[in-house]
Length: 298
Image (cartoon, rainbow, N blue to C red):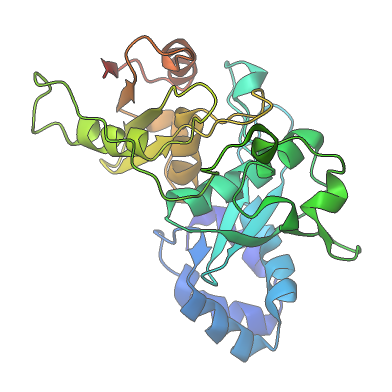
């Protein structure tokens, strides 16, 4: 079991520990449960979907990286597939506050990066802040997304975000988590053997930027030689947009890798975009100790 889960695991009920132990015993637990695993755990514990998500919050919060606030928040997103995806807040010492990732953003992004088509609900320790409410309003599940909080009745995102403004108000047809392919290709002089560049391109082609059309994607190589990608997730209110680097860091962190041991990164984005990710990506990576950033304009 990854060391970060040990204390949280010890606080779970005996039946949930028994059901989860075969899944968590390996260090490479991906901080998600498949629909098949979820159904098995529910059968073994007698928990329903909502109760199980609440019970898993301590494990999600254990994934938090909060060197600034020391405030650890967990979230669990449930996809229409039945899969459960952990999320946790992330802060980066030495980088600007704007680079912070909230737990809800993390869980949503985790599900998106793993190919989930749509979210049914999200469960979180604390009431979503306005930033997260606006971020979730970009989803294809819209204001019908169910929000589960401790000691409160289930409510929809629409209940938490009345008189909302989002992509539908701007006649945006393709929403966050919809399947897309923007059709970009790498420049001819890009080395064909560069796997990071190839994966960053795929991420760019799946990014969500309907307002600026400034599609971008990134690929990171971890200290263990593993590859993680991230896509840009733009927002109708602009500020809650999530950069591709943060999306990649979410998946890298939830996979149990160390954000301070990234060895190389490749950022792919449109030539002369209205919104460039390069400067912020370079600065945040430098704060994490990685200076090896390749920038490929398309």
